[in-house]
Length: 163
Image (cartoon, rainbow, N blue to C red; front, side, top):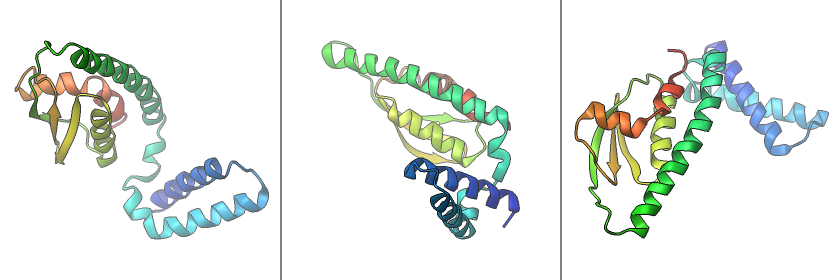
C-alpha cells in the first residue's frame, strides 16, 4: 500500500475518532490513533486511491464552497417542489435523463450523485463511467448537455477541484 494512502486514511479516521469522542485526553488520543492505524492497514486501498491528493488546498476550498452552493441549491429546489405541491396546475414532466460529468474521481462522482439525490425533484438512479442516469420531476430538455447544466448546476464545478 502506498504510504500516501495510509497516511491520508489514518489522518481521516483519527479526525473522525476525535470528533466522535469529543475528547482530547491523552489515553483516548493514543487509542484512537492505534485504531485508525489498524483499520487503515486493512481498508486503506478501499478508502482512497490518491491519498494526500485529497488534502490539496484547492480541493479543500472547493469542498467548502461546494457546501454553500449545495445549501443554496437545496433551498431553491425545495421552493420549486413546494410550489408544485401547492399548485397542482403547474405542469409536471417526469422522466429519466442521461447526464455526462467531467469528474474523474469516483468519490467526486459519489458526492455529485448524492447532491442530486438530496435535491428535491431529482434522484440519481445509476452511475456508469462518466454518465449519471437521473429521474427528474420536470424534464425541460432531453439534450444531454443542457440537462446536465440544469441538473448539475454549480455542483460539478466545485467538486472537481484540482484534476
